[in-house]
Length: 365
Image 1 (tube, one colour):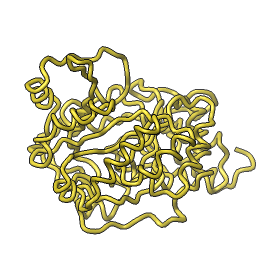
Image 2 (cartoon, rainbow, N blue to C red):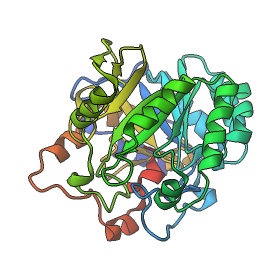
Image 3 (cartoon, rainbow, N blue to C red):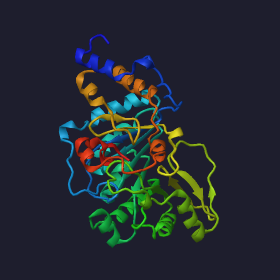
Image 4 (cartoon, one colour):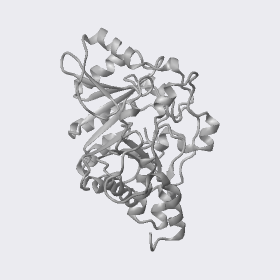
C-alpha cells in the first residue's frame, strides 16, 4: 500500500479480517457459507416523503447531513469496485431514491458500466409520474413500486399522506414508458389483509408482477409483532380460494421472492423472509447513502467505506476491505430471528436513536 496515507493504511488493516488472507485481485471469494457476492443494494438518500407504519412509525426522524452522503461520483466509484469483485446487479434504494436531485445523471453513469447486467430502482411512486421518462432515457432497466393498498382512506392512514392518486399515476407513467414493472405489497394483518386478491388483480390487469412481502421485524418496525405477519402459506391459501390452483415456477435463482403461477399464466412472488428465510442463497449486500457497508439486513454493525473513499484509499484497497469482509461473512440474520423463542422487534426506539443506521430507510430494504 505504498503511497497511501498512514491513516488510510491503518483503516484498511483494521477492516480486513486477518483470516481471509486479504485481497489479491480478481473475483471476491465466497463467504463462509459458500455464497458469492452478486447483488448490491445502493442507497442514495435516507429521506422519504411517506411515513409507512411498518417502516417509519415514529413522529420524527433525524436525517443524515447532506455533506455526509456519497456524491454521484463516489457512488459510481464504489459501484465500480463492487463490479470488479463480481457484482452483476445493482438496485438503487433509499429512503425514497427519487428525492435525490438529478438522479438520472447517476443512473446514466451506472448504466454505461460494463459487467452490470441489471440496474433496478425501488420507489414509493410518489414522484414517478414526472420521473419515469427521464429514468428510462437514462438507462434504468426496471423499476419496483411499493403499493400496499388501493384505498385512498387506507393509504392516508397507512402513510400519513393523502397521495394514492399520485402513486397510481406514477405506476401508469412507468407502464407508458415501457419500464418492466414489479409491485411490492407488505402484507399486514389488520391493515390490508382484505386487499390481497384485489392487489393481484390490479397487477394482472397492468401486466406487472406483484410480490407479497411478509412483515419483517427489522429496521424501524418498532410496532412489529408476529400476530401481524401474514405468512406465505396463508397468502397461498387465500389466493387459491379466489383464483384456483397455483403452481410454483421452477427456476434457479437467488432472488428473494419465490414465484408462483395462476391457471391463466399470471405470475406473482412471495418474499417470506420472516417465516421461511432464504439466507442460504443470499448474495446481496447494502451500502448506505453515507457509505457504510452492511452484509445483512439484520446486521447491527457496518463498515465505513466513505472514510476510505475520502481518505485517499485506492480502488484496490477498498476492494480489499470489501473482499475481506465478504470472505468472513457468516450472516444469517433472518434464520437467527426465526429461531428465537420470544421474538420482538429487532431494535427499540431508543436503540434506533443511538444507532440510526439500523433504520430500514437508511440502509435500503
